[in-house]
Image 1 (cartoon, rainbow, N blue to C red):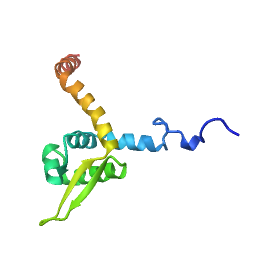
Image 2 (image 1 turned 90 degrees about the vertical axis):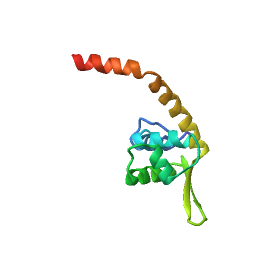
Image 3 (image 1 turned 30 degrees about the horizontal axis):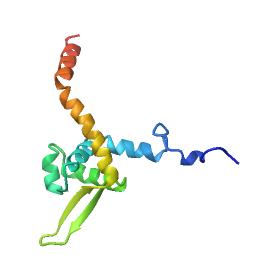
Image 4 (image 1 turned 135 degrees about the horizontal axis):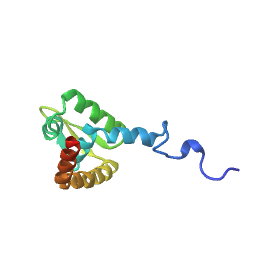
Length: 125
């Protein structure tokens, strides 16, 4: 009898093959983080989300949404209307991740003067 769970059941974000690491990589990509932050504000249709996340291409947004859906962070709901539309919404897991990303974004937004000063100091070296 062994003590503890089997090694393949232990989640370790530092382990190359761990599912948590793959999800971490998906969530922390620039576009995924911004999509999660946007969806933290509510449900969005594709084009509205593309306008909200300034600078993302259609292709990159589509790939990002697919990855986040695969990881269980959001749901894609096809609304049968005329014309049909697709809406994206966070799952409970996605909402929990977005809440933590929001705290990080708030910290970074509040720290813009310090970051700008540090960048100026670094550039002057």
